[in-house]
Each structure stands twice: as C-alpha cells, then as structure tokens.
Amino acid sequence: MSLLRENAVLAVFTCVTLGYLIGMLRIGPIQLGGICGTLIVSMLIGAQNVSVNADVKNVAFALFIFSLGYMAGPQFFANLNIKGLRFAVLSVMEALVVVLMAIGIAKSADLDVGTASGILAGAATESAVVGTAQEAIGKLPGITAAQSSELQAHVATAYSVCYLFGLISIVLLTSQFFPMLMRINLADACRELWEKMRGAGAGLEAGETAALPGLVGRTYLVSQGEGSSIDELETAVSQRASVEGVRRGSEMLEVSGTLRLQRGDHVLVVGRRQAVIDTGHDLGPETPGVPGLDSPLKVRQVVITDKRVNGQTVDAVRTSRPRVTEGVYLTGIQRVDQDIPAVGSTELHQGDTITIVGTGSKVERFTKMIGAKVRADSADWIYIGLGICLGVLLGMITVKLGSANLALGTGGGCLIAGLIFGWLRAQRPTFGAYPPVAAQTMKDLGLTIFIAVTGMAAGPDAGPLLKQYPLLLPLSGIAMVLVPAFLGLFIGRKVLRIEKPILIGAIAGQQCSTPAITAIGNVAKSSVPMLGYTITYTISNFLLPLTGPVFVGVIGLKP
Image (cartoon, rainbow, N blue to C red; front, side):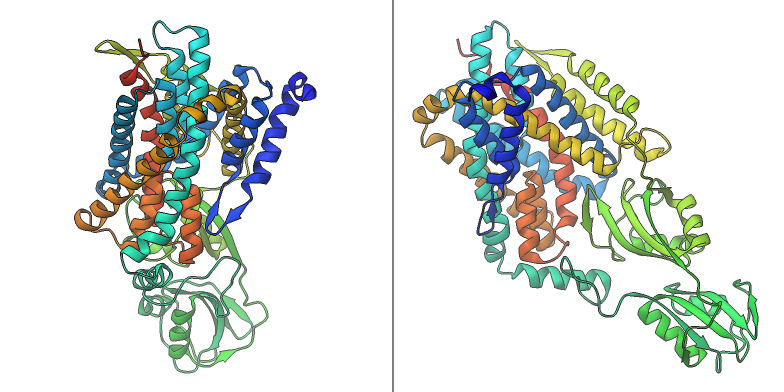
C-alpha cells in the first residue's frame, strides 16, 4: 500500500482496473458495472489511508458533467415539445419524489446532510448527484474543513450502499417484475409494437443480419412496361423504390422523371425489397447484372439540423419532401448514443444521427437539405474548454432563498453549459466538434476518476457509518426506487397512456439507469423500449444533478 500512497496515478488506475474487473461480475440480469465496482475497490483501498488530491476529483467531475450535457443537449431541447413534455412528467415526478423521500428519511432518522445526500444520490442511481451535493456541502456557511471532509465522505459511503440496492431493485423491477405485473411477454409485446410501427416484419437481435435484406437493387428487361415514365413507376410504389439507371442498347441514358421506357431497355431499380419486386412486375423479367448499369451506393451518417424535420415522423418527412428523400433510404437512427427503431412512425429530432443509403448525388442532395455529414473531426478543445470555463463561472452565481444561499456549483453550471454547447453544435455542425466517441470516452473517464478519488477519500469513514446504519441505508435505497417506479407505472398507463414496452424503457430512463435499459434490451430482444428511455433519460440527467445543491440547501448543516 505504501506504493499507492506515494503515487496518485497508480492509486487511481488501480482502483479503475480492479473496479471494472469486479464490475464485470453478473448474477442473473444484475451486473454491477464499472462505476459501482470502482467505488467499492476505492473505498477498500482508501480505508488503508490511500488518498489523492481533491483537485483531481474536481477536474474529472467537470469534464464528466460537461460531456454528459454536451451529448444530451440536442435531445434535451428537441424534447421541449408536447410529446417530450408528456414523458417529462415521469422525470419531474422522479426528481420530486426522491427529494421529498430523502428529506423525510433525513428528518425522521436525524441524519447528517452528507449521509442524507448519499441516500439521495444512490437511491436515484445518479452518480452526478454525488459531485453536486459534495460541492454544495463544501460551501455551507459556518462549516469547518474537517466537518466538510467528513460529510463529503458520508455522501460517498451512503451512495455506495444505496446505489447497489437501488440498482438491483430498478433492474429487477423493469426487466422482470413490471412485464409480469402488466401481463405481457416483453419480447412478444415489443415485436407486436414493432410490427405495428413498421407495418410488417420484426426486428433483428444484436449480431444478426437479414437473410432477405430490406434494401436491394435489381435489373429488369422492359417487356411490358414500355411507355411508362420514371415518375409514374416511382409514384406507384410511393417512392419506396427508385430507378437509378437505364441502358438502351449500348447507350446509358440520363435518368429523369420524364424519361419514358421502351421495350428492350435494361432498368436498374433500387429500394425497399417489396417495392422493387412490385416495380419489376410492371416492367418485365429480372435479368443478371448488366455491365455498366450497376450504380454504387453510398452509406452515410447524417446529423439532423433542419428545424422543419424536428418532431416529424419518418413517413411524414418522406411525404412532405419527396424530391429531397427520393432515392434515399433510412437504415438506422441513433439518439443519445442509443439505437432506436428506424421505422415510418418514429419521430425524428434535431441532433439525431441517421444512417442513409443511396446513390452519391442523391445522398449529397439529402445531406445538404436535412443536416450535415458526420465527420471524423478531432475534438475542438477551444470550444470544449470555453464551455467548461463558462460552466464553472455560471456555477459560482449564488441566489439567496430564505436563509439558504443556493448555487448551481461546478456540476450544475457545467451541465447547463454542456447542454447549450451541445445544442449549438447540433444547429451549426461546422464548429465545436466533440466526436461522440470522444465525448463518451471523456464522460466515462471523468466519472470513473471522480468516483475513484471520492471512494478513497470516503474509505476511512466508511466502516463506522455502515455500522451505524446497517439497515437504514439498504432499505432507503430500495424504497426510493420502488415508490417512483410504481408511480411512473401508474401515471404512464392510466394518465399518459404510454404503450407498455415504451413505458418500461421510460421508467428506466427516469431513473437514469443504463444497467436497467441494458437488462430490458436483453429480455426484449428489441430496441423499442429505447423510444421511451431516451426521452426520460435526457430530462432526468438534467433534473437529478440539480437536486444535489437544492437538497443540501434545504437540509443544511446540523447545529
């Protein structure tokens, strides 16, 4: 241990390495995850009087919370509409209920503000609350350095216990118990809803590919469709297929909507499989590949920036802008770094990353009108650094509420700055690059280092606190998950009328629980629950971290 005491870098990454190793352990649908594993290991190491300068924790937390906001920013603002606010009811309810329950537990059990804040953070399974609450504790009026250190250690200890029991509770509730309570087989219910949304067919599991791909290209010899124009053929299949090449004898013709086909023409048709087959019935027999007629297709990821697209379904965009979408086929949608169903009834939001396929000219036209190409740019650290600096300054603003002085702190300020800077980047993708892989890496690394340093600081005080509250902490973690989860189920079904598979994902999102949505996905074998999860997850990731300073301000320092 002396080596760890003398080398902070070695201490931090020992916690990270062993923590993620322990986090890989799985019992049924429950997996601890790297963050929980890191916290456990760091507290054990910290109990041996190994510590790291708190400034490391503060820098890591600022990087984590800004990256979190940056990634969620486009979706957060996109969800400020009727449908998004409908799901926001669940996130607002979650924040209010956990704060009120934590206040009630703190008052009835006469808890100090550190332990109570740890219960709030752990039961809400929201690691960001640890940072915002610890920072707020350090700014309490009249607090000494020793008191601040002890209370901040209590936050981490109470968080670790409540998080563990809260994690188990939300995973079992959403992936196992709620489907039984609603009398559904989650996989079947997702498949049925998927088929309803897309019209026919079912989704594929991870690692599978379709034996009959949905997007195909075929060549036909015109024997019965002579005289038909290209526009007439494409309109007949509702633009689900397009003519991409016509060969007449040895001559390649320029394809236009007014071009009329003649007997003996060879025609290349690209599009959705059934639409291509239907078009072939109007043309003649299918032929092997014709030299010179094959047209290579481009696959491109595009970030949606057009405000007119925001909130429209895929089908509505195709119907309202046929010239833009002609010959371009949607094969994937990513939102908040999660895949969601790419079907006609799925709403598109600014900031969504969509995968499209089509010929080069049509893909370029679509990209220019709808959004911007996802580029493998390096991170713009001027933009990122400016955002973090402004977030820190914003967090320093203090508002007096009664006898309490409330401030967002570094956590709240950097979160809001991240939301705004991420949204601005989505509006104008020509500046402020922070590639998704880089943002996700910085978010995970920042949180992991923050948790490691926090756990080591809490280690020496962990034992006495656990002996003092051996039942209160785990029971609080369970209760503060059960109550808002069941309320979410009731409100979602009886008031908001949300479809059952989507509601289960939304309840996992209101709790900001990535392990829960992972377990749900494993049971559902579908991305349908993601439609609810991405909305509530984004809003709760904004609301829950802000509960830390508010809660500390309400509870205050015990006299």
